Amino acid sequence: MNGDHSVKGGYDHAIGTSEHGTIVNSTDLTIPKFSHLLIAFGGLAGLEESIEEDDSLKVP
Image (cartoon, rainbow, N blue to C red; front, side):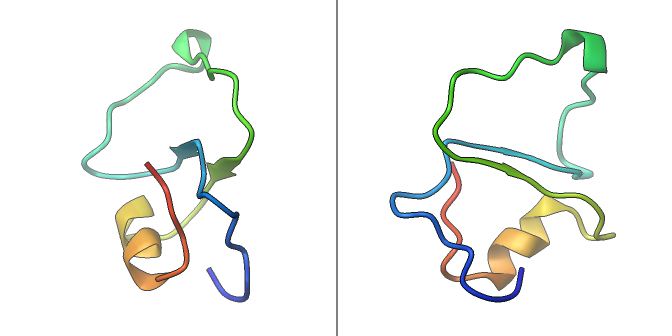
């Protein structure tokens, strides 16, 4: 992620692709109430690499 995309206090939830994640069917997906949600698409290395590369990104 390039640029200043940080959110004060970080994100409440993050959704993305990962080889370490859990497969979730869209019919089973529930998203709790949130103030800041990060959805990441793409990237062969998954969500973990995006988080590691951006020092200002705060996710749970």
